[in-house]
Image 1 (tube, helix red, strand yellow):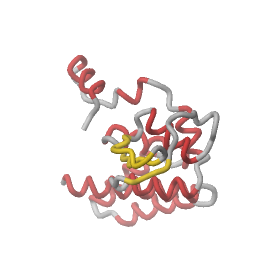
Image 2 (tube, rainbow, N blue to C red; image 1 turned 180 degrees about the horizontal axis):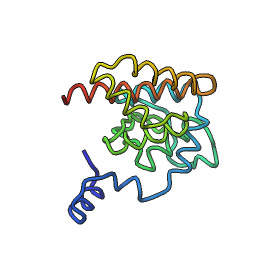
Image 3 (cartoon, rainbow, N blue to C red; image 1 turned 60 degrees about the vertical axis):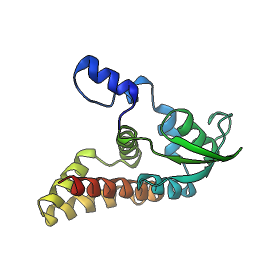
Image 4 (cartoon, one colour; image 1 turned 180 degrees about the vertical axis):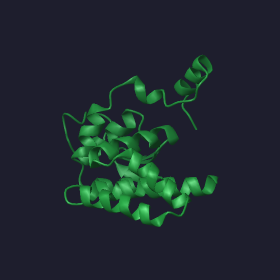
Length: 173
C-alpha cells in the first residue's frame, strides 16, 4: 500500500517509488532512534513483525523538548512513520507501521544506525533463496561481529526487519 503522495507521483512520473519519504528530512527520526532504549526497541520489534501495539505517547510536545520514549512515539506518529489506529485514553494509542514504503525507510534508518550495509542484506537474502548457506553465514557473521558489541538493542530490531523481508520474499516466490 502506498500513500496518496506516492500514487500522485506515480501518475505524474510513471514510476512507482517511495516519494513520500523524500518530502522531508529524517534527521530527527534517525537521531532519536539512535539513542532509543531497550524498551523502545522491544516494542518496535512487534511493529516490524506487522503487529498493532498499544503504546504510551504524547502528541503535544516535541521530541526536542522531552527526549523520552513517549515523545519518540509521538514524533513517529506526528511525522507519519506510524499510524495511530485508535486512542485508548489521552496517553495511549494503538499504532502500526502504515505501509511498505515506511517499512522500507525504517530498514534504511536502522541499517544506517547499526552500521549494516543494505547490500549485505540483499546478498544474504539471495543466498537463502539460492541455498548458498556458506556465503549466507559469512555475511551474517560479518554483520553480527560489526554491530552486536555496541548496538545490542538496535541489532535485534534489525534482525526483525531482516526476517520480515525473508518471510515476505518467501511468501511472494
